[in-house]
Length: 233
Image (cartoon, rainbow, N blue to C red; front, side):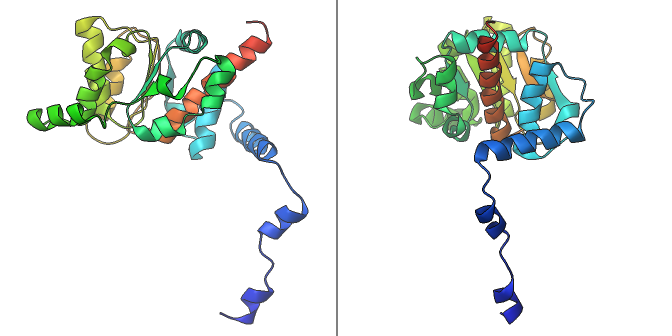
């Protein structure tokens, strides 16, 4: 390692000398997104959601691919205020959702209200016998809470397909479906089917998605609910 490396001033020293809070950094990021995409075409509350998704990924393509049902935001705020259970298709999403954000909307929320069944032993056994993904049987096991609950998919398109079947065949009606599985098999089709079923949804068209984006949507919906409360709405 040459002497020039030891003589170089680390970039972080500038932050030491001019501290910036996490909140300020986040706002600077949002300002940069707004500046780069001023004519996004979304309603203000929809943009709150999409901007948070872009902030999470640095992917401006989400402004092209994000989809909202007309009733999505009203349904989301109502569900969160009513302390609706939140089903997630991966424990990564469960671990990423901020309980503090949920409680800011409804203090009754606890960790038990955000649940995932994919690692349950009986789910694994059923999946092994059937030769199908565990995510499918995990959705089945969550049936009672999915009716009127918030369903969040950032990983498993097969799980979304099974929920779609339950909507069609069993008249299950989630309060909101966040449809953002990622991948190459059944992904596009599962989202398109969901968006045709007449239930409230927020989705990403195409192959893109992922657990971090799904988490960001929940957090941004909490922001929307808080802003409405601040306006008396």
